[in-house]
Length: 594
Image (cartoon, rainbow, N blue to C red):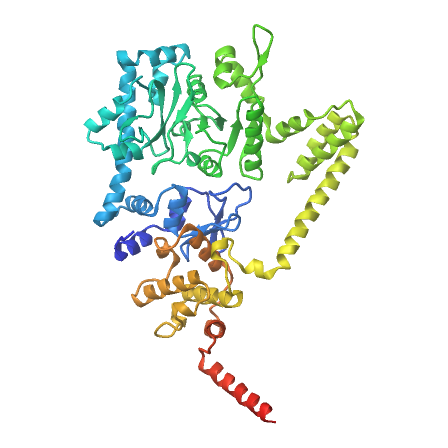
């Protein structure tokens, strides 16, 4: 994106990375760097590093890194131009955009404006006689008007083009309505509303923008639930329904549920800390989003096989994270026929009331207790053979717990369930843990014994063809970033000398900055590199490099790069090497004569 270089330099200079990252992550100084819990993956021990000197961040756990613009792109889920605008607004700078850039920002804003106007239109329809069917449905669900207003609930009519006509009359084009996922192309040149005869639930992100819609039918037709498809302003992996309201809750945790209407009912009942994913299992992106607002999660999925699987997946995803995780299992409800059926949060609140849900919430199991109960349910513990199998599986689970006290407490509970002595179960857990540690050590040893693979980038598309040259190329980049005064006038290497296209391109970009009198710094490359490329280059910069003997190191690196470049071209690029080769040739001729 073609922002003027002078503007970009000023933006980066005004956006100190410690200040920007510090508004999202609690950082603690450790030496010259700052450390905290990574906002991009779950962890209990801080491996996320911020270097005020280099103005970069890097996570030693998930291997993500870059400059301040990269951080905002990742954390706020914004493309490069919007991340620049975000930081410019924060720094009080006016963005000097070219026409093409203004057009891209205008298109994104138009989609957000369109979603907002569509939400207002659906809301107005609910208040009118045409929306009576949806209002009656809300009445049957016992959703009060104040709650409906709080969530911006609306109505879509049982008609083909009501929204289409209304929005085009407001000046929006059919292409914009298609891009927002509000209308559908019938493949014959015609268009019709996507949402018809439905209760409408606008999806609002934490910045207050309407990014999508959820909906539910009023009868028994299919599909029962329909959500917006992915659009330029909406990714279901990165949004949680109700989080725009739940982030303001005074409660100490956030409750994760499955259905949007569960969230509406829970908020109405006083549980204003409830959120739901949009038709997807819990994702790493949603976990990162939640970490900005809480450190305690309560999983409240439906008590059926699908709900139990979703709970197990979420627990695996959250394992080892900084979150304290509990599981609230809703009891099954007995029908008039005596059949036990599942009930969701909405059913439970209506049948048992808020006080009963509060009691369940207070007595919810932690993640370990839930998983232990799931394992126990698979075995007949009256059978000796089954008790042995249970002990093997439960000890493997407990072996993964980080704390010795935690392992001992849960081992005693497992022993009680299996009706064996605590000492026997403790011994099983210790054996399982030794096996686990041995497996991990073997895997680590295999990695250490394969230095070539250790030297390679994580991304397969960035793999080095010549590791010896690439390591020297990395060294040149580190020295250039640490002290460009070590370098002679004029570039000592051409981009073609580099065996790695990425490292050669980065060298050229940094050298251009140096020649233009600008700092040779990574944050300025955010527009030129992909996220994967920036992650790798930042990782390269984390490796130790000293400028104390910098000139000698630079000379050695350049020699290696030229040697390897000469091998690739079949010639010799260094004069000293050429002389050496000539000397060898003469000796060879003499031997042949002899």
